[in-house]
Length: 88
Image (cartoon, rainbow, N blue to C red; front, side):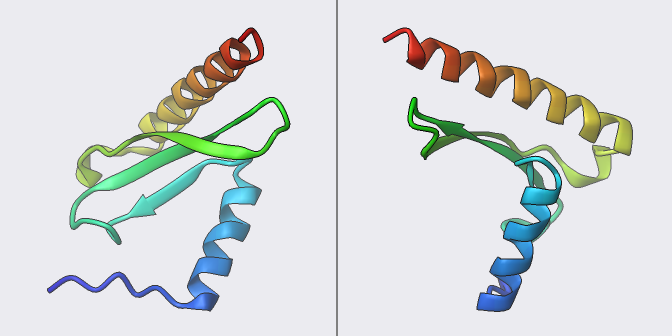
């Protein structure tokens, strides 16, 4: 069975890496084998995180250029959602 290898230290490291990437979370094979998940948080009007948008493509198809493209698309998506929420 696949192990998630979650410890307090590994979670703290993941949070630090996410902050270094400007809020992009990347999960390489820890949730599912041969799957890389990318996500970005959606914040409410008080800037509190309350949801996320993610994609989870097959790992071997994730060249660095594709990672950058996905990051850009997720950023555009979350910014559009946050703007729409401000209008409600």
